[in-house]
Length: 450
Image 1 (tube, rainbow, N blue to C red):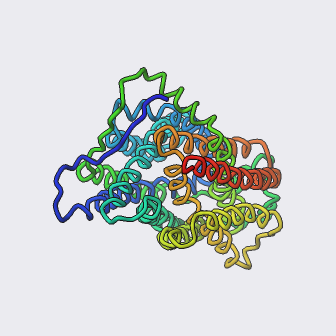
Image 2 (cartoon, rainbow, N blue to C red):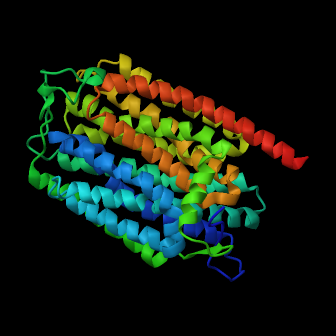
Image 3 (spheres, rainbow, N blue to C red):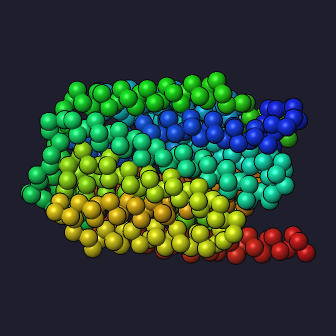
């Protein structure tokens, strides 16, 4: 195995503030992501609606997540050379470039910036996982608590902040876009909901864009958020020491990722990771376009998607504490059932602007599943692949990126109803994969104890 690493925070003093240090570093990391993803996720939710012509927005998302597939595989090598903190700093700089490209979206600006952003996403998320794992390890020893419970608490803090971005960013986008003189959508020419088909000839420019100066104001706010996140990481996040057991060629990191990928547990978990990403891709790109923008207008996207962020932010912290008492099995079962049920609900719901309250229910319920799965996925990877964390996290994010890419690419030539059926099938397959992975892990653990 290549690039085996052990991580430890760059702190030597053993004073009375040691217990607070892992918490402080987790908060710095969390608030950095809060600032950056307030911008990114709000733009992602609007991308398919704002840049509808020629499917530019969806193609840009496809390029972004498609590049993550390669960047995830190479993430361990990149982090080994650059370091975890510098990986995050570079990521935040590229995020500012991405927001800048949205001021003048075209194939020449949005596609290259999306590729750059996807290229750094693998190292960024792998670094995030390494930081939280290191903090969780230190915290568990300082408070004499088992690793899973301590890590779940820190994951809960991080993902509460992360999911709060869906509240802040979406509220900002809707409050700003509602000031536009052209945000109402009175479309009656096509069907909204599961019957919506972005590839149909009569769907061209069905969603009216807001005034350009209003879009500029919105993007200016998001650019400021990115700069705040960059400063927080650069000035306040400590370096993460990466101690390699021995120097090995960079090519071995690719071998390491591939070796981890063919691990029986990882092979069984990959469908679970992918099914979660596929359903989220439908929520972010299709629900926002085919249900919200089509029925109510683009200015309502932020308000409605904020309900998703509110649910995930509140429940993430609660679920992380609940995991100590319930264990992860029951949480995963509930999360996976909801994840599979939501595409089924979209198939049979005929959205109507006369009943706006229903539009909030879908992302709210979906948020329950995401609050459970997001933090627990990180804990699951840390527990099952303790000896090869970097490559395991890289595989986790790569598999999710592959599913996001497939979802967005399919959206350019398949109608929504067909993709909902595909998502349901993948979700059921992923649920079986998770159960099988837990059984394999249990048998391996029992054999070691004997």
